Length: 94
Image (tube, rainbow, N blue to C red; front, side, top):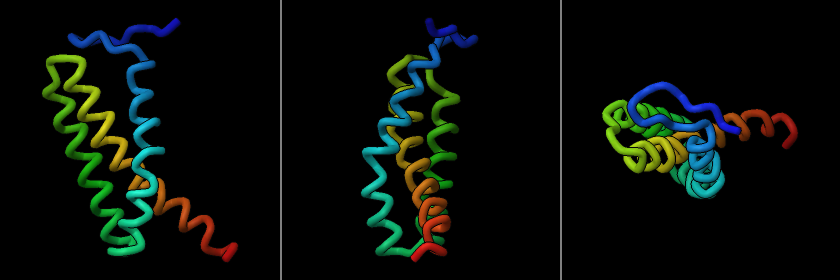
C-alpha cells in the first residue's frame, strides 16, 4: 500500500516510477549523446534537463503535469547523468 505524499497533488510513491522507466528508455539516447558530444556536454545537458524538470514540477497543478515534467524530462536528465557514472566506473575495466 502506497502512502500518500502531502501536498495538493496527493501523489503516491508509485507515481514516481515513471521516471525510472523513462531512465531505461532514454539511456540509449544518452549513450549516443556521450559518444557524439563527449561526457562533459552530456553531463551539463543532464543537469540542465533534471533541474528544468524539477523547476517545472514545482508549478504542477495537475497530476499529468507532474508526470510529464518529472517522468519525461527528469528521466532524460537522470539517464544522461547515470550513463556518465556508469562509464566512469567501467573505464578502469577496459
